[in-house]
Length: 177
Image (cartoon, rainbow, N blue to C red):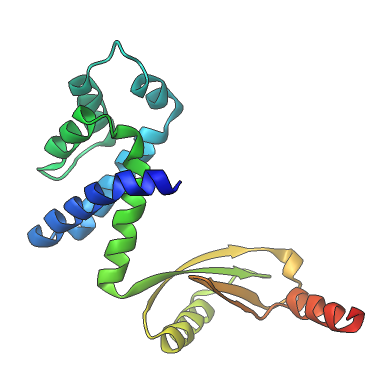
């Protein structure tokens, strides 16, 4: 995937600069995520490799399928189509989101809990994580009953395992060592 990142990076940086200067980071974020979803659809993947479909047709089809897009998005799609870079739209969206999160001082946190968290529990956990990491936390919560109790949080490459399953695994490792 390093090759895709290398190809997508200049496009993501250019779109980010354009969106930032226009004050439209959120609009472009939404547009790029929709465009990436359309580009990944199996039907579109077949068209992207079809020599019978012109670059302009591909760009227009993507724009029409993705819904309302920022003003410069049509030109951006034409540039990608002309340079045969439409298949890297998902990677462009990923790199754009990383750059946007960096600008906003935000980071994604994968929170896996043994039981569903109510609003106050989640808010308290997010507040604690924000104090610890000194960044805005964007939680992505899921439930896994196999944890038995507690939660497991991953922020970037750091993992905080406060689950009963994690503690049992750690005890087993210590006892067998």
